View (cartoon, rainbow, N blue to C red):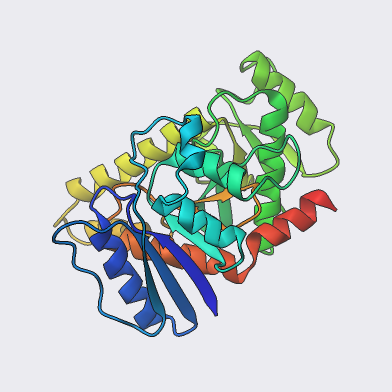
Amino acid sequence: MIRVALDAMGGDLGPRIAFDGAVEILSRHKYVVITIYYSSYSGLELPAPHERLSLIACSDVIDGDEEIVLSLFRRRNSTLYQSLNALAQQSSDVVVTLGNTGAMVALARHILGVLRPKLYPALIRELYSNPLRCLVDLGANVHCPPSMLVGFAELGAAYIEALSDEPPRVGLLNVGVENSKGSAVIRETDRLLANKKWPDYFGYAEGTELFDGDKNVIVCDGMVGNAVLKASEGLLSFMMSKFKGVGGASSLFETFYQTERRHGACLVGVRGNLVKGHGCSDLSAMIGAIEYGIDIARADLYSAIEARLCS
């Protein structure tokens, strides 16, 4: 059985999305059990009883706009804390949340611990699933020195090795491919990666290589990665709306959206499997995020990455 801990309170559309997503997942996957962590309020309608569904009421919710302060670590009865603690206690195999990214990263480091000292956790997003191609980091870290970016390259490469048969081919996102291009941080990261035996480093990658080309791990700091992700999602939504009802173009974009992208990002570098879905996820995106979590739990992703990086 794959045991999913689902934080129901982080999404913009409320816990109903998580409830309905969990019910749908249970109908599709007979080997999955789900524990939902939620906060009760007047008028909240809970899902119908199910033998593979547990509901745990919590008295606290970490809102999406809350700052990361020390008091966060004392809020042990929040839905996010409780779901992560279940992972730490090995009563679940993966956590799925749509909630506060900064809080998730901070609490994951605090509750689960990091895989290796000075290796910072990062958010990975798959740009394609076949062949596997990913972008790292997407916003877990904003101010990134060269040593942190090198760690992202290692995490991304280990992710590729764990979930595909392709060898990792790392590229560093930059404003051009010439040696003179980029900030001092980027140029120093390039030097460090070029001198490593693993992973295989293929130099700078321009924005045009995000979705096509030989490199399958694209490394950047979290601010750049988040901006790239949001811009790509916005462009796709814009194109879908513009081509709506025009021949087969709309269905082509919808097919791409549903089959070429996993919903959510994976936090790697901590001792557990975590999926962070977009806060504005609808039901289909919620289902996709849970199925992503099932996939990485089945592969025991964090253990595979730990074995590669800490052996």
